Length: 313
Image (cartoon, rainbow, N blue to C red):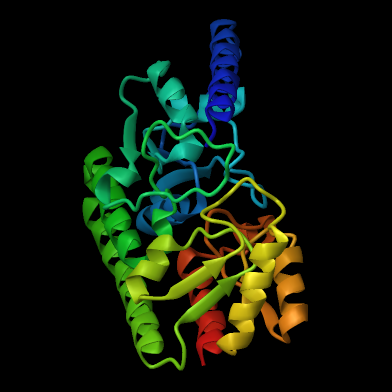
């Protein structure tokens, strides 16, 4: 993330925090139901993990609007209010969430338990190719949840936080966590077996690339139009030409795009190479329809398994 963009986002958050403080000072805070544990999550994976762990015993809120882009999210005064009134706040802690520190520093709820999920995994250093980026500090890939193995760790840590806040239902939470962890583990085994027995290990993305952790888990050779989740919208002609050559050379049958993408680059590569296109979901966020239908992280990764299986065989 560029220094200018980071400063802009921090200033936007400061304004939201100030507005929140003004609203609460004027007595505009609405009464809240305190009968259940309140959990607020920035992104869909930790939202889903918290839902799976707590069931009906907690009120779990996803800050990110369904269907919206996670990397450009900035909290509104209402979002700040939700965080301030929560018992537990779950966030990743990467570059896209630089705004969190400012919100937490202003927190009036001193009992708020915060869980920074990047603290519990070994992060991969982010790669950058855009000239406009000014990188004075090492940045780490924040898409830790694309790894099923990381997600099991995150699930356990969220369970620990929930149990600390609600010891009365600890047994239920641990049982739910074990059941969901088993589903994730089974899916991880399926991915491992599928890749080990695949005809090829080359994966092409005509899109951004938030799958570094996923690719590392299974030893996949990935090529993408952009490194990481670049803010660029157009790939160079040289990059597209290179990806077309890879698809043709390795007989890659599928070019992938990620959720909420225009799919234009993936389609261009597919049209020029005779491949088809398919979705590989990074799980940052889901559509309103999927959220209402109860789609889970495991559901999304199961869909990824099916699409990737076709692409590697």
